[in-house]
Image (tube, rainbow, N blue to C red; front, top):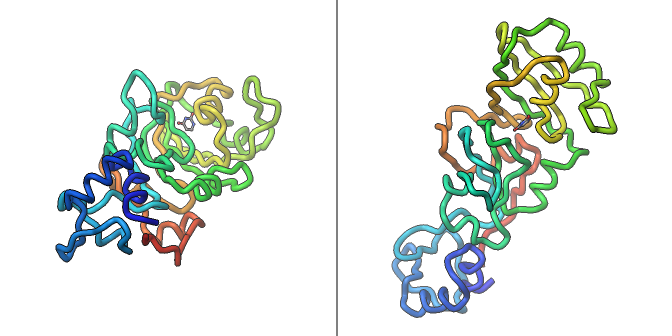
Length: 241
Ligand code: URA
């Protein structure tokens, strides 16, 4: 791919704007040489105004989503994109969340512009385990684990029962739940179905990938080893133009 299209797709400007940037030598290599429109290049060696490019096409990032942010490109309130580089919504394809977390849920959110990876992680057939820490309004009764594990729990307005889910009791009003589906407000509705109310919800892992100690509101690239943990390794794909 030519550098102008490449940078346009990464959200650096319109085709015309990026052409001007190249003409005015704002696009360089790490060795200081100027890049011209038809030159071959590698993502990692390009600089715009002396700064490295945003993440390469096909990258997966993890965000520690704070409570109060919405997984959408359009909303009146705070969007997860406010926590990310401003060019992310201007990219083609766009950097899109892998599934969603509610506004009031915090924790691990994956974001990628790779539609195949996104589909592999969210496909209902993937049965990808997602682990949530839950704070409850009322004490656990003791029968919730059995009900969640039964594979017969029906949520209001849904035609099929939930797949079995695991419950680990962490305290009178605290639990860790593992689900392998991504139904709308699933964890909140599961506890509503057993007469309780979720007051705090935090996703700590997806598959074998843990959020770890990434601070709230921060993001970082998911590395090659972690892609293997997620079962979506693209090892061998190059990011060159
Ligand atoms: N279940 C919910 O209820 N909300 C989320 O954000 C994720 C799972």
